[in-house]
Image (cartoon, rainbow, N blue to C red; front, top):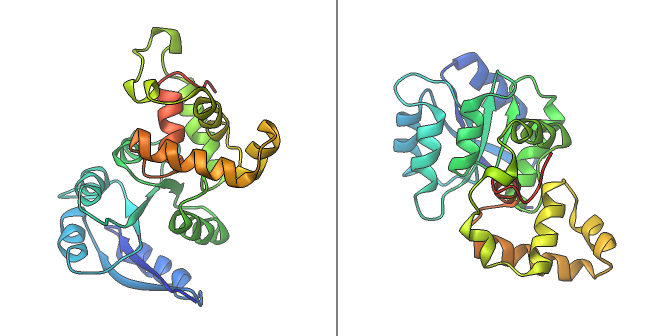
Length: 219
């Protein structure tokens, strides 16, 4: 069994201690390090092999948005899950745009956090319905899609890829998309892989952001 290496970034020591206890209660996870701000995290992560970073957004010196942006500019960067105390936190959405794979509220149930870690490592699922709903609620408040400038990343997609992207934005799984389009699930996986490559998206969460910010999908 592969062990998932987790790095904790939060300016509150007690919060980090709680996350450490939860993560290390799992047979398939281990905490490989922790930091109290984004700058310290970047220094440690330069020399610490990590699969997933749990990143607080509001921290002194360097916040989680800046740290996420700089971290994900590195080759072979780990996945980032943004943690926030505030629902619909603009900092969290900024981190998502910077490349974070998901965000969760700090008061999320332990199974949700553990499931999120496993999901972003797998790279093939939007983390949780509640998280997806918050994303959709946020994008619903954006200007009318007809007033937005067309995103050039959509121009390179085929009609079928646009269909798949729209369904991903609605939170549909590969199995559900296959049923909707009456194709094999392996075909859907191929389309998803092409979507990620063509749009330069890191994972399905980034595809959801693209679909809503471009106006292709509406909440």
